[in-house]
Length: 101
Image 1 (cartoon, rainbow, N blue to C red):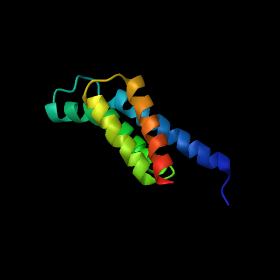
Image 2 (image 1 turned 90 degrees about the vertical axis):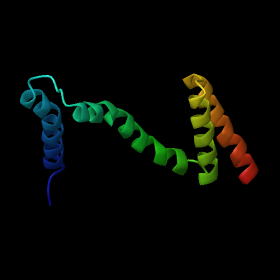
Image 3 (image 1 turned 60 degrees about the vertical axis):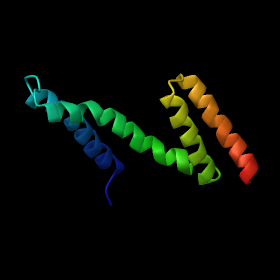
């Protein structure tokens, strides 16, 4: 049986390596358009991958989460601010769950 401290040590080494290796190995500016484009979109994709399952699975019914997602996408696409989008999504989940349950 391994100690929890060994797991924490391995996790710390991996986390540290992921952050330090690019700083030490890449000394000059990245000029490749494909790599620059990839690195530009990584934070957005990561946020979407972490957020999307929670939107659908954390509500009482997946249908209310999907409705809130559609409302949020629509309002964001129309240029509304984050507070408006958030309130509308919460209200959508509330109303949808009242109707569905």
